[in-house]
Length: 300
Image (cartoon, rainbow, N blue to C red):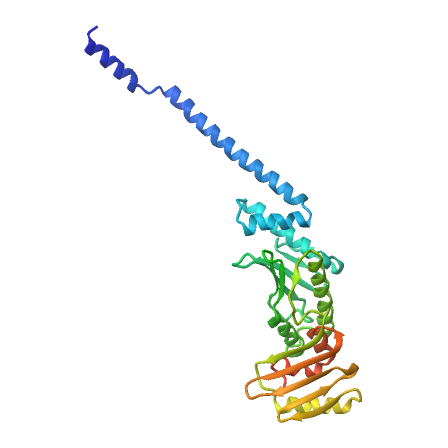
């Protein structure tokens, strides 16, 4: 055989593709992919099992790892983690019949519904919707409590404390007893948050502190409202109404509590002093409904 013929044979052999060997190689690659997928799925199952078995402190660390630090986690495992973490935080509501609804992020109690959602900063926000006195009425979920897990702080949306007062006093969608029960339930929850290591920031809903604060209503108090407050104070032996200065009034209440009203052109400034008695604004408002028009607009 000439050198030229030998070279042609080698080239032909080199370029030849064996279908059998190609099939084997492709099958091997396919199996490698299956193994990789199975290992990932198995790892995810182990993680979900770990989340399922975790106590609160472990769930907290997992939340920081997989939610705040964005460690890789499947959608199912992430949903499970947030759900179990949220449920653990809501444990005090078991005393009022806490049950999960058909929606994975929503729970129901005898007094209200609550749902969670992550905001853009990955804070855990709890929304609340109280059960109305008449089912013909519809109220929205209110973003009431925000947990900043990174800083371990809890913030109450004070704006919606006023919303609740308005739903009771102005709209008649809620009853006074509902607000009282909700106030108790939320304060039990805040107490539990503290035991879990969170700092609960000052709020109008906190009944562990005495009221000694200024509150601004973004509307001017009407003369009709002042007249009604004056009449109520004069008709009750435990109350009194005094003029302190130009457009400044003081309402003396029982147990040496009082409120000072600063009447202004565009707004109303209030100073509330509960005389070292621990109570929230909800408790104060439901105890003295004749003063509520100073907090919420709609009744003059």
